[in-house]
Length: 257
Image 1 (cartoon, rainbow, N blue to C red):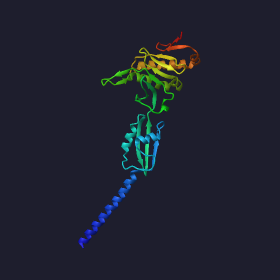
Image 2 (cartoon, helix red, strand yellow):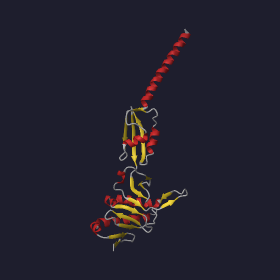
Image 3 (cartoon, helix red, strand yellow):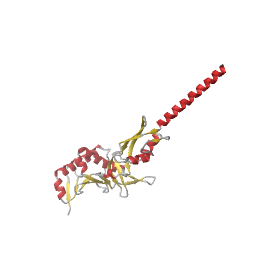
Image 4 (cartoon, helix red, strand yellow):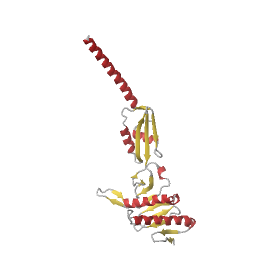
């Protein structure tokens, strides 16, 4: 009797193990399948491009090698993506939330064109939609590091972005009237207006960590804005060579000969 009971117990235990294995296997297969991919936050990067770099199919599929971290790492390598979050929603939905980099300006080094955001992150671009109506930063000094790799002068880039950010805070009109910020002249920062590309000369060489220099730049922006508003028709029709804002409490207008 004891022997039969042992045999029956072993058969029962084996049956439980088999059933548990089947249930676990089915659950595992279910967890590693997706029937829907929800993609949000991609404004200029196409769905097909994101799925391609993630190595996912835009249809129901088996994902035996599905690893959310790996998928997230693949997508995060895209040069125009700032952050990405990947999650699995039951029963079989894969969610991908994208935060794209938001360029503040086009960075033209003369030999290369890239984008730069408000956090001084420089990145290449593929989507030309991001170039529409963006101001240009040019003439930035290139520093050579010990590795012999050239890098941008970050002080100049900070100053350019300081001008653009504060122009946008003051008014959309002022921001839209800045077509280019150029650093090629060591004696000034040249800010070109959209009206006939008139150069406005801003003071250069200051340190943005110095509050006085910040106030000086903000003051020049106010003058720049006032000139654009009060003399917009005159600027369009006149033959102005440049307007010098480097003097205290005045703007010196230099006309073409």
